[in-house]
Image (cartoon, rainbow, N blue to C red; front, side, top):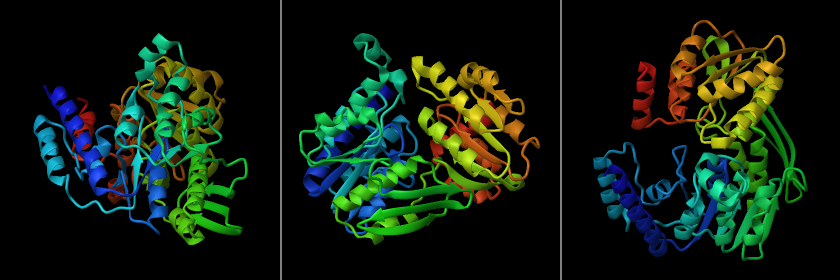
Length: 440
């Protein structure tokens, strides 16, 4: 009953959101797709364009609302907290009331996620982008494509990229595409227009320097024949170099001044759980990447840890979920990188224990350590038992389903007020974290 009600409410709210944009919005829609980095890109694009335009986005309070329910919730100004039958009925009523509320924006930026077959096709049907952006495409959520993989014999990479490619197929005005991602490049022929803008950190890049350290990141870029140096307060992942290259191209497309661009980068706030840096207990550093995990972002986080850590490099790595048949391969590949980058690995979850740990032990150096745990609760107890040393840098990264590694981040914070800056702060996840700590 609850599942059916949820589907009906989402379908109804999607229709309402579609109608609202039709009758209340006369500007341009920017769609942002990809398998990782979408929320950060949306936040940066919004900051950039807000200097000249009135901009709305689905990046709200650090959350990237990118699903078949999240986008209608954002457009209709519904802030979900819990998901009982009563709550779904309440959201239906709120959406109906908010249909005719003022919506005076020049640009709407929608983050569009692909978790399963049909997702991007569905989203771009109701929320067709004028400007389509694809950051990347990889094996994320491949478990949900297993049936399609078996019936078509196509690779997971091709199936997921094709689904992401509806972003280009439905775009009206222009597309921005990552020249360094062959799966993205393969989709550009589906765009029916002529304006195609590729971005790359290798070929004709605007980024002249990108140097992260524990004190922050030095960025030097060239824009409209001017060089400018920016110091960001946090150490940034290498992937942000690609995101900055994208927004420089967007700035050129909208003919923005260099001040708009530099302000957007300088003031960029990393979304919660995407490699934020915090002061930890015992004079340690905590890199919080607890929001989610897949292979490419996990590798990037390990390289950041290696680059910025002043002393011991510790990685607390949880399972990478929803990989299906690819789980063993992806966890093995991560183990090879971890063996080259860290001093201590602490694994959380059955997939890390089954696949990552054995591979890591085969290739690790003599002085490297690995500890394996089934649950977040066990891991937290181990880490808090005088394990950390001064100047340790601890990376915490894993998929969200059942693990909730932000629980470990919260426990390790030197300033407990920083917990407000962590991911999943709503009532539903607070309940789940409490259940996890109780061992339920």
